[in-house]
Length: 445
Ligand code: ADP
Image (tube, rainbow, N blue to C red; front, side, top):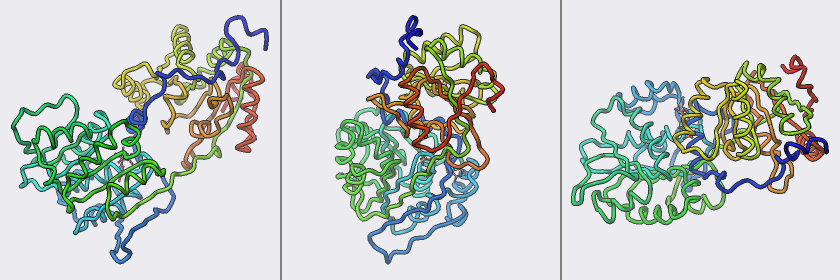
């Protein structure tokens, strides 16, 4: 491959170092994931339930009707297109709605219905005759708070008397005034400010306290302390619930500090597999050669929808520009975009307005696009030391056992090092990755 050195260094994708600015925060990942999600993530695991008091019975329901919700709330749930509770909701909802109120820690991956569960519990416990905030939800960021608020507003569509207010940056309350909203959804800093400095609501009157995205919360500087300070001011009788997508030690330590005597629900992540995926590789000489391969298969890429992963933002931008210049319609999701722009691009892609999305490894981590039929690794996923990153590979290409859903993966290899990475991945998953001639598109199916 020495001949390829003229235009670009071959294998520059394996260089490892990713620009600092390209890293995205846990909060952004979580937000993008929410935006990109269309419906529930399937999960076939059994729910694991732990509780301190085994004498208190735990119910589960198979229908929303069985929850004895107010009719206007039930109507709201149905209007959102929810026919039956998700797996976590089956057990979480009756537990959250029972009297006396129970505390809860619930962990399950993004997309399994946690938000809908606690929003329903919040609305169900809202008493519109109490004209002060008595239901409070903490979210790690402005955007995540808005997402939750939008779910609440949709679900409360037929409950016109419930008032919801955001406690986020940009929301100002005149000094000396008292809030008469029932529900506050906001970030820890702002809520603490309102509750302790501005005193526009009384934390000792809060009856329901939700801490969402606990894992993101503790990953965000200062949020953990602020959450604990808020928590300390709540009355003992307040129902407390905490939700998290992951379940590591730090999160659990924090959760147990905040939530007294909880019912703990845990839904293990569904395994992804490569079973339905046809994997190929194409041997290329350089970046330009990789581009030509993609160009050749562009027609195949756009039969369904495709995502192309590059190692660095620079490569991703270059590829997007080059493809656009040649008249190929592609979208670029990159770290330099504002969060609104990213959401816009993801939404357009999800709606099928764009058929090919080019992105970097970092941007796309944790994002699943179910309808993507083809994944191209412009650069193979590697860790900081340039070694094969099998986990990322699986996450990107694998599917969670959706029956009958198949996909195609194409890996572009440009030298002995990336060939080694490819062989490592092939050996790791024990699934063949077949060589493909990009000139001969008919082979891909
Ligand atoms: P999480 O908070 O765990 O990420 P969400 O509550 O946001 O999950 O739910 C993920 C997606 O599934 C959302 O689009 C939501 O509207 C939808 N959803 C939630 N509960 C149900 C349900 N019972 N039936 C159908 N769709 C649901």
